[in-house]
Amino acid sequence: MIYHLITTPDCNLCCEYCCGKSFQEPESKIKFESVPSKPQFTQAQLNSFLKKDKDKPVSIIFYGGEPLLNIDFIKQTMDAQEKYKTVDNFLIQTNATLLDKLPKKYVNRFHTILVSIDGGRITTNKNRGEGTWEKVINNVKLVKSNGFKKEIIARMTIEEPTHFFEDIMDLINPKDENGFSFNSIHWQLDANMWHDYKKRNFSNWIREYNLDITKLTDFWVSEMKKGRVLRLYPFLGLMNSLIFGNKFYLRCGSGVSNFTIISNGKISACPIMQGINEKYLGDINSTNPKNLSFKLTCSSPCTKCSEFELCGGRCLYSNLYPAWPKKGVNEICDSIKHLISEMKRIQPEVEVLLKNKVIKKKDFDFLKYNCCEIIP
Image 1 (cartoon, rainbow, N blue to C red):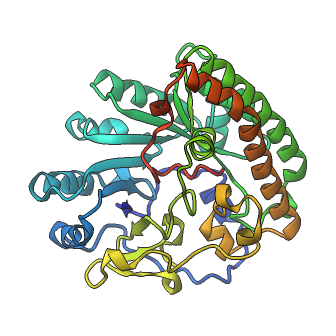
Image 2: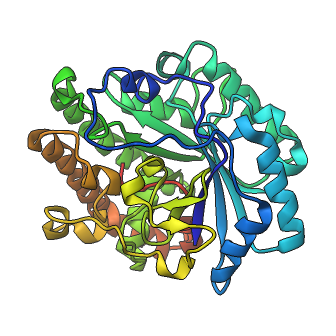
């Protein structure tokens, strides 16, 4: 079981596809309530909840807002687990601008660090604010120099006018001499989260994105022929299922094996649902985690789609609260089907590389529901 643990709903950035768009959002029919800026429960209460389901591994993903705005809580949680030993893995999803503020003894305990970065210097600073790319890259280099040896995942948010292939290649093989080469990358479409479809050029851009997916697929295979499996999570997760038969429901795990503990102690199916009181599944003081699963799931038309088993429904939140018209949703679905078809296209070639031991099965292993939604 994996839990997103909200350290604070606050953030120190105002990215144009998140905070920026929220300023332009029409009055929503969804009723959001405010949540405390810091957790209102003790470490003992948190542990009492977590240990009720200790017959399976437990992971915590520190999340926000920006989780590193509450470093004290992160340290307290990690310190408490020295005593309780309930949590098997700690992860963090961060914009990384404050990563240098967390002492290295805590940083080096993370199983995974997911870093929000949207590509090269120009794209990232346009989306996230001038100087953000420089700060992120410097902090990633710092944690590496301080001895962090586990996985760092670049987590992109993409939308028009992002040139996807160019920007992801700028993370893999940076053009900037001051850049950092990421081996692990996840990307997520900014799509069907806001009522912004009519203001955008998504229809044209998604066609370019689909062409870039094909280019990236060919590059991924070319690297495999050299014995290198880049951990491109939408590719990695789908290929894992196609070849090895590993099953997922919602690819992100929300409402299945991935839940969110909000700062008020309430439990939601995913971090986006913090503040939606009508969708809370319980709270850490009175709820048994064994009773959480499948209370919220995707519905039609997702469940009637021929690719539902591989896609899983893409996003529980946008399935429950769709913001786009049917035309836009269909464009997203067509892009997912294209992604799946590209993975099926190269599947025989990947299987030959595995058979010939050019690459290994373990190259496709990853921590299930590790904050990479798999389906962009």
